[in-house]
Length: 469
Image (cartoon, rainbow, N blue to C red; front, side):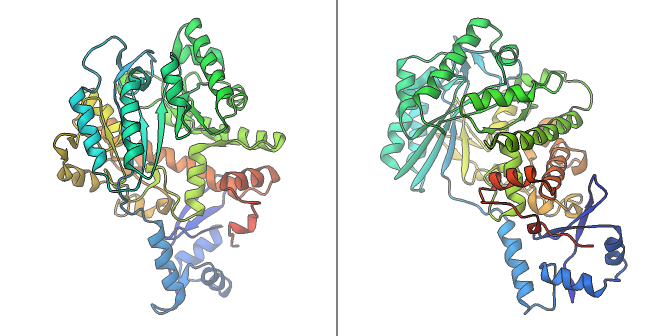
């Protein structure tokens, strides 16, 4: 019998997680590790490994074929372009201290699409071969140029069989034309809600009247639209985090069941914020506490809310093809199924890449709407967009579930060859996957109920997470 190479990681409770390259995993302990490392597996070990798909007898064995299939299903494949992030204006009517895009003032000039740029954007969209498209309007505050949003939407509705639009808006100042635009069934709202009124005002609006206007518009939107039309996320300052119970109360009050906790991004104006020492460690602690609170709260109320990114990582561990979020795609091909078009018509591989160019850190543009995408630049970035051969990742038990973030490495370190375990991306994802496995191996009813809800299944049986003595 041949055993596929196993990677292992010590967990906080003293147990050890073992995983193979195809993402098969189980819990065990030091005694099994000693037997495995010493080539002294007993009969019980062999039966367990064979039944769990971690071993095979030969290349014609179905277990070998099954492993190859499972490994292939873990890999992200290049997809047809069907998602574009558009930045029709960089101007904004707020001045958030943690702004990651280095927005321009509301009255500034030269930060909107010109007529020629709009025409070129529509021409680019017209060449997309997919039958469906998702358009996300970013900014700045995109509702400052509803006319440009209307032009794009009208074009896409005529070009594609199915289209969906997301407006990333601060919901600060909405006139009747903006409301009419948002009323459409194919158009959704994404906004920021940092917690209760005091927290939101401290971090975003900085003014009582503007805070009142935001919450008035949010309440009007919730009353006006069906559940699922509005999504929101909070940005968390680790030096002054909100009360998580009050944050969840705010989201539940507005019918928003998915909360995407985000640390202050190392981009744009936010780069200048001093959050003190060991920001990553403190963030990981806060995030873990939030998950625990969420599990207990869900169990008490029976109304299941989720932390969006944690749910994505949970699904990534337990399902094939669960790689909708680019951070956990592997390989994470750039300019494959999505691309960003900035206010000046330049293409970027990610939203964070355009932010780096905005502050003059590095030019990561990959062409513009008049000349097209420069595939030579894309291929350079793609050389670092996978973790298969990284000298640290190849030994990590979480490698089959994780991705990479070349853009974040460039932003933080100015290079893409940092030792993986020294990067923010790695430190954050080690902690997240540690938490994922802690939760799925809990034996309490509260954890089982939330895991089932987050996976969208009837119930979670602990036997679905294997263990071996």
